Image 1 (cartoon, rainbow over the protein chains, first blue to last red):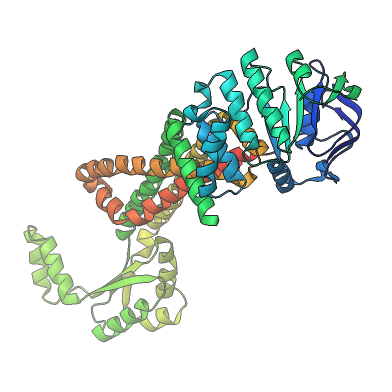
Image 2 (image 1 turned 180 degrees about the horizontal axis):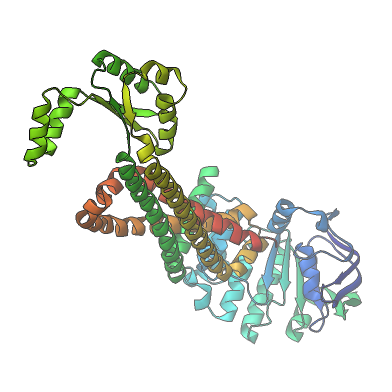
Length: 225
Length: 307
């Protein structure tokens, strides 16, 4: 589904984020990418989202080079990929309900679908009582649950969670892990990047370890998911 | 789907406009200043045009005829002159009317009237007072009457004198003054308009700079560029609309006061002019406001859409 072929990324300031990455992620996999800060985990996700382009090599999404996408094609790609970020990246001027509704409107969903699905997904992440709160009025855990709700509302084929628990306490982290597992069980490919030990041991059959922009190891684990 | 999207975009723009009140107020304030400048410029042009017209109306060419010039010949010349494209109107004063006017003007001057009576016959000939459509056209009219034209040759026997050469200096000065006034007016208009536009652009850019992160997020959750941009355009249009309403609310009482106090100086009632020309002045200002808001938003958002 997603394939990195000899991918390198050097930022304009000269810092090497990725070096000769070869990685293949198949449909419905749960891949956990671990590594310290600066290992290149976030750059990897940005390349999948076409937020950045590789300096060398190609990133393929269903065998199409993501870097060749024009603006409209990038939009279509992002509708197929849900994203959750460490810093939440919620729309601060919109309520919880509107944040999710916006993602649905952007995907061309009807008003009827929005009215029926938004409360439902908010209930899934236990935010039904925070529907009309702004992100600034939510706790860290609530914000991340809202971000997950937004990421999954359009039933994406892939969910990228980039350090989703970085700003959360232990209880909230467990909630997020639980939700991610459920999403994967429903057939969505999940790519999780983290350096949180709790997450590393709790989720993901496949563990990809990164160091200084390179893949240090890529292994299947026998853990109970 | 188009109407649904339009409805969502308008709703979203309106909600953002209300929620970001401080930013919206700042943008409206700056746009109001710009539209006030635009309205003032339009009214200034009207005042300038009125002043120029007033001065132009005081200038004319007078053709004085000999005492024995037949009235038919004078009226024939009047008819010829009226057909000239440069001529606005021609006013005929007969010899009899000339003497009556003279007596009126010198009603208190006993000696002059006595001298007139002693002459016995009417010493005045008829005259034509010619108004040009534009003050720069007097020379062309004078050429027809004085030069080598057929009209000049046909009427050489009956024309006593033409006062164009006496008025030429005044007319030339007037033409220079009008040209300079228009040039200066245009220059001031251009400078003020440019300053105002730059200020509006900068303010709207600042308002959108605040939202630059959200623009990036919207793109990342799969919103198309157009869908991200559209609510900001609605906000820009709203800035222009509300600025127009405020500018109008300011100019109605302002022109009323000027109308009451300065009609004699200006030569026309500015309030009456503003209200009777409201569709054109207000419409233009509204369009300028909406266009400025829209364009500023369009350009400002464009910078942050490349995600």
